[in-house]
Length: 468
View 1: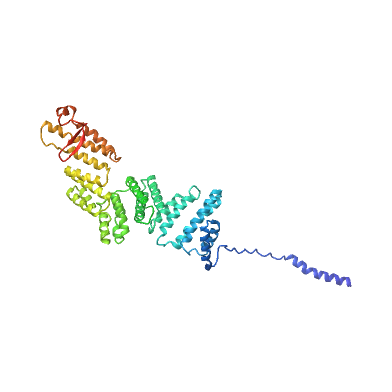
View 2: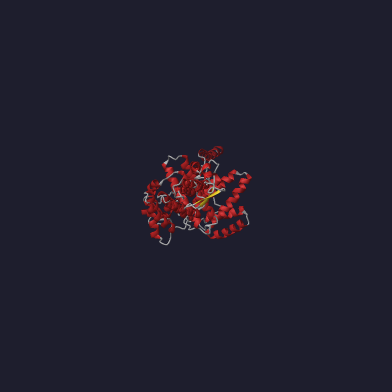
């Protein structure tokens, strides 16, 4: 009886245990650890970290400076613009170190962080008066090319897109390197496919924006590279003019509505006028309207000459007296030596077309006085000399002496050969006019007149030349 009772008790105790064995306990799901950003601090502490970062950067302790900079950048990205200029210096130093060590993974990490820094700077300081979005985005494009070119991540189209977009914003402080890069990339795009009208239009737009940016730098008396910016402008002007991308009618098609739509925006009108002047389209009604509106907005300033445009329009219509009058007026409206040289030469052309050769030669000489070495002026003077007859008689002697003008003419053509733009024409003119020199027999018949090695050509020509 006692044994049976014990068995019953044991069995009763085993039943709950067996029931528990059939239903094992569920394991708890793992809890994700909370990730704490080590660089995140209360905003009140940012100034202290910023001061420490300045000191570390000053001491060229770039690793410590980076830790302190990251703390401010993470916690207070809008604290000051200097946060981003400091960051650029710090990361440039760390990138150079990683490159020297051959640490490609670290180089990529730093380069990506630099790109992120530019994006955040545009977010917080894109409206900065001195360094706005145009500057930040163009600088980002330059650095992107610097850090990523040659890698799989690099995209030439990305660089161009950023540069092109940057120039659409206010160019309060353009970046010279970015202007140069934009022009070159846009020029290459156009040269690669000249039949692509979209690329041609973009090149015209980019060229115009580059001109504006360079003008800002040239006008900035505090800018250290003003002279270099001016030299760049001359080069880009030459490249654009030689590209053949646009003529006056094309410019009118592109910019016909610009004057009316921006009649109160002097900077846009100024940009438009600069483009038309460079393309020698000053007779265009679009250009004339732009200049007139500029003068209405700022009567005391002068940029471009409406008179020059009218003069060129007269010249095209062979109204030489009207052209001369307007070119003379244009001379008084400009302080540019280059413009003065052009207007004086064009006046000379008008007189030459009117067969007033003495006046033509005189104005060509004045143009040379303003801008020496112009082959076009020497060619014009030589052609004027070749038409002269300083000896008005009809005798055999007068006819021989009148041939001496060809010596004087060829003197001018020889000078024109020094200018690459007129060297070919000058050589051809010399070959033509040298056939009309006085012959040895003719000189022998006039020993008194042709003694020595030089000869004075009289009349309005009034020069001493070499006997050939």
